[in-house]
Amino acid sequence: MGKQRQYPPELKERAVRMVYEWRQARNRADGGINEVAEQLGVHAESVRDWLKRHRIDAGEASGLTTEERQRMRELERENAELRRANEILKSAAVFFGAELDRRPKR
Image (spheres, rainbow, N blue to C red):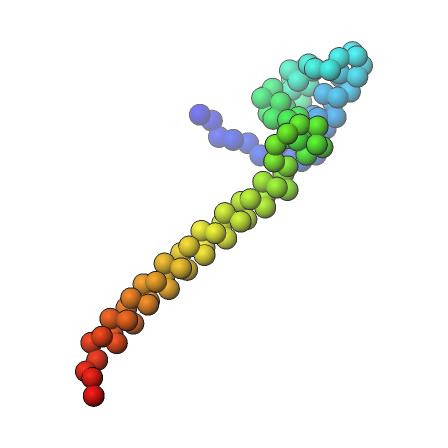
């Protein structure tokens, strides 16, 4: 599997716009992905993914928007951090609890 390339957002927006223009010029509801991909020198699946993401963000298709996906990643990262902190606190409680049991009683 090859290395995934990062394309600039301007290229992605241009590709999506070109697909819509291609479809409008031919009075079609689909197609144009391969033609646009060839013109821009990118893989057709990249253009297809960008178009899908654009449709979801615009509310034309179901799925998580880019903002929702970003928020989900942030929440998952925060959740993992809180779980780690909780484990540390549990370990500390066990450690200090054992220390208290070892002290001689007066």
